[in-house]
Length: 182
Image 1 (spheres, rainbow, N blue to C red):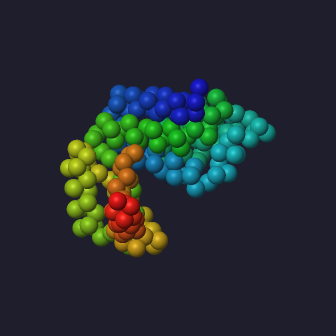
Image 2 (cartoon, rainbow, N blue to C red):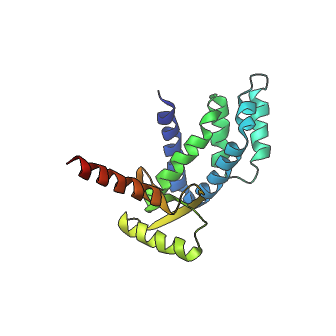
Image 3 (tube, rainbow, N blue to C red):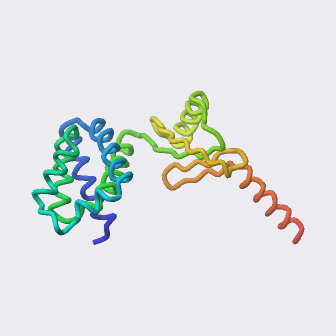
């Protein structure tokens, strides 16, 4: 079974528990924090997979490290340790967040720009993207990319909107090349 299929199954289980207990928002917020910890500390996964440590030691470490996290997330991490699948934790959280966003009509968007977007620009863009993609809300993560000459590169799910100057110049170049061939 592929890793992504397994991660989706754990995410769906976490989602169902969140729905039953009405804690989806809390689980998303804490899940993001846990994912960030795993992403920033590559040694954490290596440590939790180390064969020299007992399962009890690993679970105790999880309890101590994630004291202020909902029990369902901590128990999921412990289950992953038991089943020797702790490396799936970040992927499970990503899938869980996607499930919650789909349920709530929210889209996560990554916007690359030459400079940091102002709050007004973000709000305007959020409104336009929410309308265009029929979402209740849009959460923008702005990534500053100095290699862009100008414009925006937007990624929403599997859709990319490339409004950068470089892309526009490439389109003009293709049009000129095509026109010269005729």
